[in-house]
Length: 164
Image (cartoon, rainbow, N blue to C red; front, side):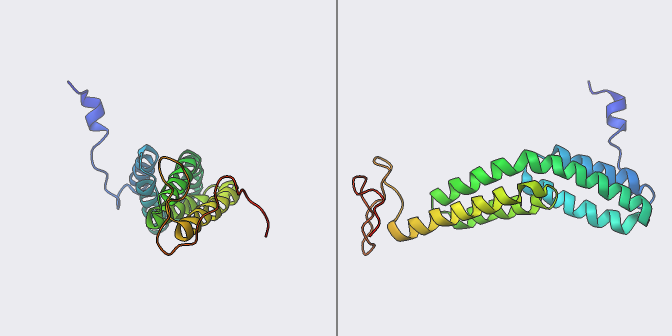
């Protein structure tokens, strides 16, 4: 049976009468989120709510707390987002790649040290998409680009990367 104390802690909080508690719960929800896009959405909402519901001094303290918590989330989510973006690019899924990189870039606001890695990942993913656009998706058996009608032939493994 669930503990009556545990249930009592989850009673609804009135955002007007208890703004600090309300915002603390929203921040807690962001930290518990397993989905980076959902966490970002909660962080965005919480930041707006803090500015609206708290006075300047309390709001500044809360936003500093939010920033440090969001930095932890960024360190948790950015590596996976970059990996997913590269995987999507390798499959030729530009829209999925873009959403993953956009989320990683939004997390960079909280963890600026990741900016160079996100920009580098964007460049690699874009290069991958450009290669796929030029030569087609790779053949699963050989790993080499599958020939597509009208596309220039891809270099073979024996040709290597020779300069013209």
